Length: 175
Image 1 (cartoon, rainbow, N blue to C red):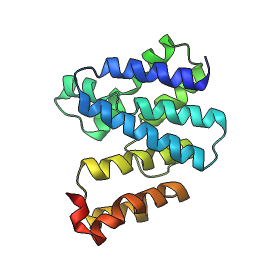
Image 2: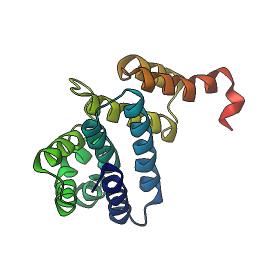
Image 3: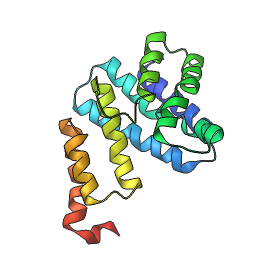
Image 4: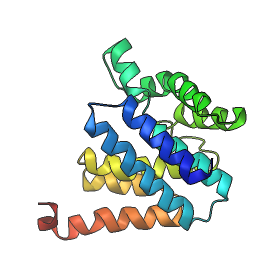
């Protein structure tokens, strides 16, 4: 299976996993597309791009298990509960062990913003932030803090500025 076929199949499996929860499905689809765009613009090698895209699709797979076990979708619970179902799904699709390990590591750390190592990790965090800043209606101050403390790639920074800085210059655009 090539990368496009792998990510398409993984996307369909994740939609099945999150069936009946369009908000979460829309979320991971948006994170995936931003991650894909940033990774391509930052010229990731093909293998790292594949790891990034697969992780972006699966990054919140721990939400439903966390809600079932703890009644909460807290980020740290997502990190704790996500790797097991991700590992099972990736194994079923025939992913290689080291790729599964990296994807599960990223899932287990996607709400951990200190000591980010690897472009796949950095871009995943940026893509998730691009979507969460909107979905969580983050204030101008919060966006500035994210730009200063989270964004490191040229493309992610540019996207954040394009998406959110104009809103505060022209508040009528929020409607």
